[in-house]
Image (cartoon, rainbow, N blue to C red; front, side):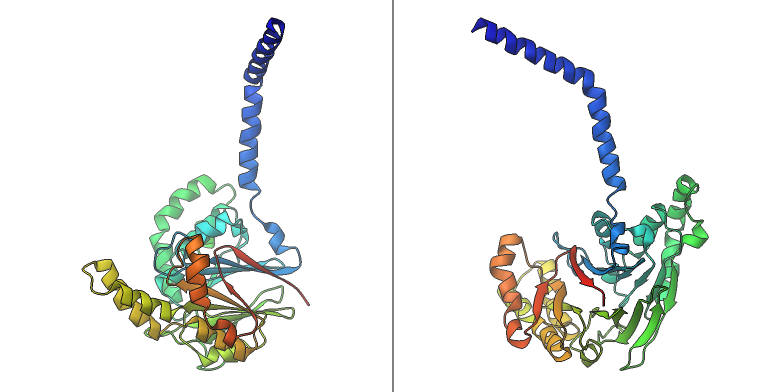
Length: 355
């Protein structure tokens, strides 16, 4: 017994001594792993695996939601990386999701509400600091040029200071700044906005989001595949017209029945936040789309898959969401649309083989 104790004691001492002697090696290994994880997290494979990738970077609204950042969708295929909208939190979320921000080619803005444009300068800045070699093109409705110029001016000091640390590898500030372009569309027809060198085409078409004067949906086409992003809109015949036979329809969804029920449950209140919720909960129904209305659009357009985004009201924590709010949110949708329906979460990926 005493001999066994001595063996255990000696073994423990040697183990501790070995750990102490190896500590610098272990620390270095751990630190190298941390750095390599940071450096290798970007998914450049999304740009070269021959598939069309659609990622719902942000799926929320102006209402703060710990489960969702604001509107942003990424599309990556054959060397081209574009974003549709860039709401608050989109840049951080895209970074955490490992999207190769240094390769971002363009951002297309559906409209100029803050929850669709707030992170535009941060997306551009992150990509620049990660080594982007071309300026980001920004297309959107009338006012986009002014918005981009305003962001460039507002971030001028930030870029000046940061450039001092990255000038050895980064583009000069003047060449790195986003370039904004205003686009218009006919009332009913789609308009080709941009064709990328690989053949990816981005079309814009008008949707209805009054009092916003100019709001677009976008249709992306590439090698027999198509994706439509609604942006914010009320039920729109243009959505049906320009979503025909689309592989993936990503459509905003505000559940009016759930909003009305919540407003009723709140009743009379002195809480200013809840009072604002009651007022806005009624008003936004005039320029947004319910899940049932979006399902009707998908059905009439014969869309192959419908993905709800810009989710309102918030769905709550996981178990509440799965047991109560999601079934409420989707109530009646399957009676209208027989295709696959998904309530988007931040970071969901949809992948398509090319024809």
